[in-house]
Structure formats: structure tokens, C-alpha cells
Length: 302
Image 1 (cartoon, rainbow, N blue to C red):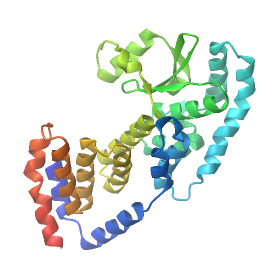
Image 2 (spheres, rainbow, N blue to C red; image 1 turned 90 degrees about the horizontal axis):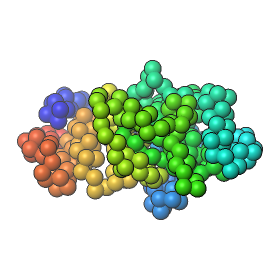
Image 3 (cartoon, rainbow, N blue to C red; image 1 turned 60 degrees about the horizontal axis):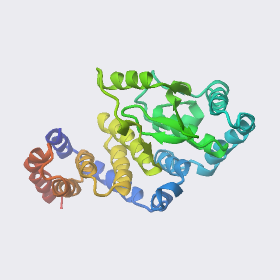
């Protein structure tokens, strides 16, 4: 894949390279995302950070307006949760009725890989999303309404959980907020892996805010790389690098995106960083073969 990407990159026109450079300069401007993710995990404004990711696609997006919409939703459902105080199943049912019946939120089964499913503003506007973005809405509304839930990074299908008085209740926002039993989780896992897989305790570990943002961005990155939309893939990888600068996979993905956009020297630098961070990784031999190619291409452009 890397060799094909570099070959396509070599054919790009000088005009395209100029446009790409302008986009890169604009993207590197500072924004509030870096300030938010620098906080301790529990203090990260999850909705705010998710909306700033969306502002990469929608530069005029009003982050505060969407925060206000989440707060209004919480204010509307809070009295029902208060009535159900002490009965978590009744509170979960109140949230289910409000979010998935009255607000008509639903999983987008038909267009699962539509990038709009990963942008929080689109999820709120269109009332549809993928497991992790619908879970973010559920987390934000329930927390503001006084009913604490936490994210669960279940493999291939993000969930939320309410834990109180020694009881843990798993909830699936992608399937209209239904409560999951262990057998349901086993079926979800089998659907992802295409066969029976044993449930492990680590599949149900709590996922912090930073990890939720990372998973959202990874979904977007995969969508854009598959579509060969290297400009959007690159800006998404830049967000991932900000979250986890020492992750070698991000360096490799940034090299692929840079090569697709024809900034060959950055592509070579990212491949070198990938090799430094993961010298024995499966793609290391392939990267070593191609690392001279973008460097030679860069020399022809300078």
C-alpha cells in the first residue's frame, strides 16, 4: 500500500502541491483542542473536544450552541430521572424513551461508514450515528441530568455502563439504549470477529475521555484513508498524534497521508519516526524499502 501511495504522489501537479501546502499551514494554526486534551483525563470536556474535531470539517461550527443543545436535552430528561431516583432501571428506561423515542436517535446501520456519523454536530442534527458517537451523546446528557454513566471500550462496539451499589448495568446506545446481558455481549463479539470469542474482563474496562476521543478519530482516519481522502486523513492523524505522540501507528498513517498529498520529505520523516518507535513491527521491512523513495522525490522538488 505504501509503494502505491508514493507512486500516485509522484504524479501530482505543482498546483496541487501549492494548494496542499496552504491547507497544511491553515491546519497547523493553534486551536482549543490542544488545551482541552492537556488537562487531566477526568477534566477533559468530552463534548467540547468532540465538537472541535467536527470544526475541522465545519469551520464555522458554533461549539457553544451544540453544548447548549446537550444541556437542554439534559434539563428535559432530568425530572424523569429524579422521579426514578434509587431505581437505576427506571432511570435507564427514562433515558431510553427520551433519547431514542422522543429525540429519535438511532444507529446508522445503512451508512455506517459515512464520516458524518463521527462528527458530534452531525449526530445531534441528523439523529443518527455509530456506537461511539451515540455513546458520547448518552454520556453527556446523562451526566448533566445527574445519572452517572461511563464509557466501555468493548471491542468493535462501544458501550456505556451505570455502576451503583455493587451493580453494573451495560447499555447499548447504538441499539436504542437497550440493556445488555453477558449473552448479548457474546453475540456482539461474535458478530465483530466472525465466530465465537471468549469474553474477557478487559473488554469491559472503563474508557476515559482521552481514549474515547482517540477511538472517534481512529474511526474517521480509517474512513478517510479507505476513501483516499488524504487531506482529511492527515488532519485526523494530526489530532491522533496530539493525543498520543509516541504511538508508532500514527507516524505510519501520517506518512501514508503525506505521501498521498505529495509532501515527500514529511512522509520520509514520518516513516523514519515509525521505524524508530516500532523497529520490529510487521510493516518495518516494507517501510525501510520505501523510505528512500520519498526522500529522492523530495530532493527533486527542493
